[in-house]
Length: 227
Image (cartoon, rainbow, N blue to C red; front, side, top):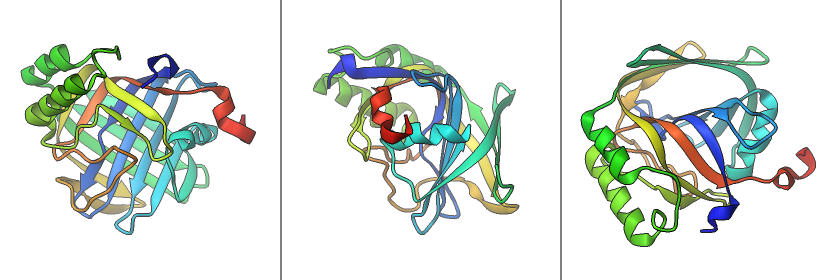
């Protein structure tokens, strides 16, 4: 991995979250990025038929997300991410055309063991951090202590972009939550119901919310004709 090519996206992101209805969900809300959008949010929704929907706010930020990931449908939206309390994350998403609405609330907990995990396995990328033995150890510790399985600290997206996702400031385990899509309950947070992947990323058995930095390549030229 060429560490010099990696750029920083800082903010909140979830693991890929399984729902009891066989939907999957992912949230990212960046407050500092290397792009022309210093702040942007996106939600990925995967249907039981593996139809992949990207909700992007602001809408133009979808071109950045699509550098790294493939979707069947892209919906420009407004997304509000709010910590109602330290253990309660609330997200509301409305499409620009008012045809789509997502609402979800997650209750989370930050444990002593997650803080220990961050001190041992967290931190920005460095040659030692991305070495095969250290990556193997970090993934083992994340899975053992919090995720159950699914940790991929160093990986590649489905479009071939390498990433490092071990730079963590806080790590919350999702204890419960549910999702409403277009006024329909699409389930509660559950263990994975069928295999879904975004490149090397797979759902955690025990999903999490992370505050920290995703390290991944970005150059303006990667946007192509959208630049």
